[in-house]
Length: 261
Length: 209
Image 1 (cartoon, rainbow over the protein chains, first blue to last red):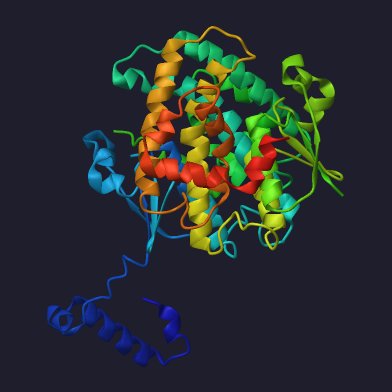
Image 2 (cartoon, chains in turn orange, blue; image 1 turned 180 degrees about the vertical axis):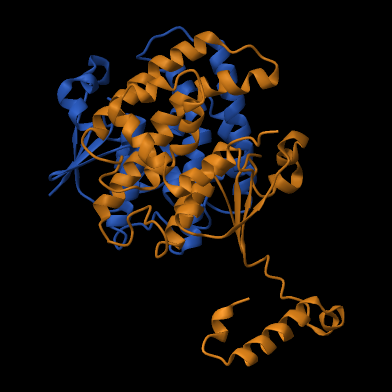
């Protein structure tokens, strides 16, 4: 109830209005007289996914940074919901997340964040540097978005998969994959260390979608035996501390932390 | 000022950029790099592209790398000339991004692995396990494309975009050097799409460079 409507009114009038409205809320008779609420779910953004999923978390981070309201629709992965025809109709690749915005259905987390960053460019953090009209800044964000997509994530994913996910599927982590992966990943991190010694964030001296895309996978790395790969590189470490301590990032991290029993 | 594209003109990632620049009617000059001599790992090159891969563009003082980032930049910079490769509405742009990401995340990895296996100059023994796994992954992706292209002429809709363009160079290897044209030809709508996008003048010119 928006009490700012009552500012400046007489106290007695205020109390009367307040109790009248309260009575409406609690009166079953009045409820029957009220029209049905307008079905707004088709107007709201729907995100199919779960907070624990790295790719869903990537999209959620974007929505938190830009104050975008989404309705999170959980998908029961354990029951194979993502491989059912009704879900495959939304994403034929059978993976989360999927965004529904009215008639538009989008999959691929990086396409979703790009879309939201453009659609809501006027609110929250300017993650793609669109407001200033500086195409070169936008291109630098584009470059580091690609580096995350083509260099960082392909290098980090096999390590995280073997360590965290293979055991859940009853497999023993493949040490060779991990060792080879670490060699490749360290080379990528050396490039990042050099880059971040020249600029505070990846695309420049501003936080952008390029930094944000690294959050969820790097969080897993920090929970693995190889967190020192980050903490031993002073500029990468400082960058990680900085991007992970943002309120939006903290919210995502909370969502990726299993509840304690 | 002419855009310098640094890399071998027949490398698939360079070809993507060259097709894009042609579609956008942007003049360019190729500065070739010999990957087999390891020129991409020289200190001078690493200053431009610290990951030691091609292509890199230099546009006056401005340097940019990652083929998809380069394509997006020029498609945006020159949006009022040449072919519109990004889509007009926000929704169209969203779909272009979706299918460009699909190319980058789902299509590129298996087809790139196949390309490495069959590369005539690398001369490495073929690893049948990698070939089998890559083929299986690629076939699954192509099944999804077949379904998609039965409903729309191009990946993002009824217009040619960066999403389609990004597939051309490595798929060209698939149907030629790698000898797996059947993967395209066995799928009616993918086949029609393939013939359409490779009939574009920009691709024909790039093949001759």
